Image (cartoon, rainbow, N blue to C red; front, side):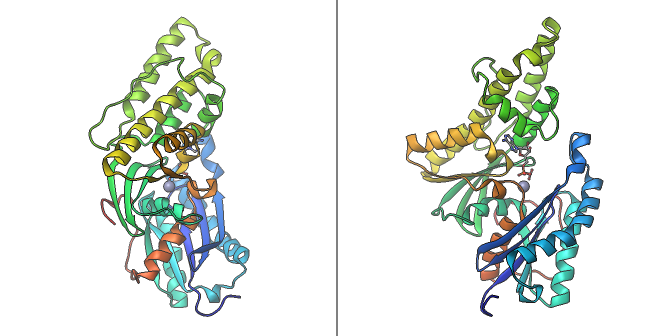
Length: 340
Ligand code: KG4
Ligand code: ZN
């Protein structure tokens, strides 16, 4: 039981292919339940309609487990937070409808959360970076450098103009015949390969922008040419190809992060999103941090990939500022996010 002055938030995340619910009491995570949808594997990518259907099946049991794991009752919940944008619209609708219904039925305040802001605030679940804080958010859908002046005062300094970093990993993995999502497998093979064996071009974008379509095309042409000479080229060189591609992608990410840190003179720096699980990126940011005197932050793995705990922590800070929304709110697939 909690005392009656506690703020207990039920948080819901359903923007893509993870159905997740979390309970946050006074900014601390009591539970974080995640149902990963396996159904997409056989299609080599997320199928939006199947994702919506799986969310429909998962949402009630996932919320039930989150409440039980937290050791509370639903009567103790004081507010409901949910991912309002961005994401797959059918998936977002399931979470939004559930959150709105729960809030209305129990007469609770409703809090709309931006998924990308939540990825940044995932850092504040278990540590306390100092502001200004710089975050490189790298996921399957986004690649952004975010300047965080305060919990709810953030600015996207630059982002990808085409593919996200995770997409680049996944698409290269597909070319290599690896199953979806291929990012973790590229990482696994890369750990035993030579990162300097093959050279791929790094795009030079202005300011803090990224572009990953060039490296994707160059890997494709490279593989096509090599396979003409040796049909077994991929099998014979898989680890070195993975290591070389990963080395290039990590350098592209790190170069922009170093530029932003230098130009803004920020020393508290973190990575977030699914690709922050990448061993090459983790090693690179730790080494760079030691060299340049950064304080480096990397969230626990379950808070890097999509999860409701990060929605809950964002919801908590919005709760403190009384940033509530009314029931007329609708989810948005592409809500812009230059300044929150
Ligand atoms: O943040 P996330 O779970 O979902 C989105 O919001 O997109 O990120 C998923 C992405 C996928 O592209 C996946 O391949 C990539 O993160 N990923 C990795 C690794 N683990 C996950 N990419 C490279 N190396 C990894 N170890
Ligand atoms: Zn995400």
